[in-house]
Image (tube, rainbow, N blue to C red):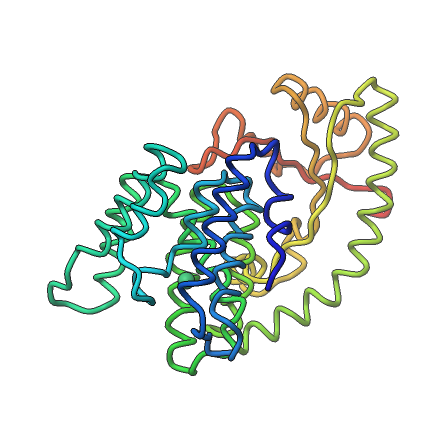
Length: 318
Ligand code: MN
């Protein structure tokens, strides 16, 4: 059995009640799905655990994590919404009941023609409009499903991967959960566009090692420059562009890799907006910016609320 501590250790300052609730959901799901396996042959419970873990990693609370353990219980086992309601009624008062209200409600929307796909989308939208946490659970469920896509029959694989790229990943983006978007996309990409996937993988592989060495080196220089100017309160990291995002960008630039300036990027997170502009000033004072590449997403935030400054500079090695 997977260790529940892998999940509870992700909670910040959990109460005894939080831990007890998660343990209860863990036990309840484990019992209800006993003997039930995934296409890969592993116990079905592993999927529920992975979903709950994905939810916990996003920093969600005990109720949402518990719902992750229970998300397939009504559809796939003999357990009824009523049973869950009864079982968890005393645990977390109104919040938990609200959650199961929706599970019940989802179960009650009956098939009304068209196809299974439309039906499940309709259910998802209805649930989301009542509580956005439903979407979080759904995205974390989907993440594990694409992580295990290799075990699924081919036609189904393509449908799930396509749906992930076209619907779920953009929703993760819209929620501002970039890591989730990135994982959903990169895991699905190869199933939908196998040839492009291989091509992009090769391009990125060639660039990645070099770029990481450069970023690591430049990060140190940049830290010194900032310290010299009295800026010490920040968090800095870097990222190399994801496969799917590079693919989308290459499409836009008609395959010209050299035209893409953000294959590698450094990120500096500061405590305030004025500090953000000040740091940009320090950077432009030390390294020449590329004209026309300064983007102010603070005065004009992206649709998902993303706010930052972007710039492209010439570092020491060009
Ligand atoms: Mn599931």
